[in-house]
Image (cartoon, rainbow, N blue to C red; front, side, top):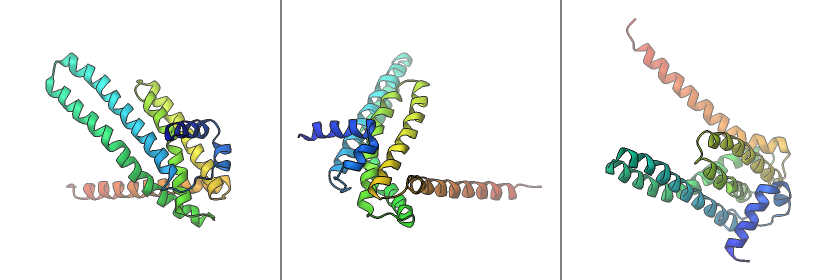
Length: 201
């Protein structure tokens, strides 16, 4: 089976039958096929994002008649095309590491590679969100629904690949985000408090 057909088959199975997919899938090397699968999804997302910028931003620039705006949109579109897969892969490597720490603490049976594979297969949702992000208002609603479904896919995957209960798999995914958010809030409150303290009485 060619890589394109293999990707398409995996893409459909992850989105439509995530539980069955993760229970039967044996390609769990995070630096092998799952990485190729994620890269394709991220490249597609980058293309869609760049297309959206050119279509919507270009129309706006044309109405304004600004050559500088058109040039800026072109540069931004190219940057989106290039950086989306690069930053996406980096984000996957880091977030999977954080999630795996909590998965291990909660009783995960396998290594980092399996956790990384789950997150990489979970990128199947990203081209969908990129398509609908082009539609004002509706895109935000679909993005929220897709995000929640993406969380479901990742939870099912982690449950299967790391042999965790559903609750522990969900906790392993959410806890890093909750802790980071808490730290950010504490920093913001501290900065605001320090700024207020310097104001004259």
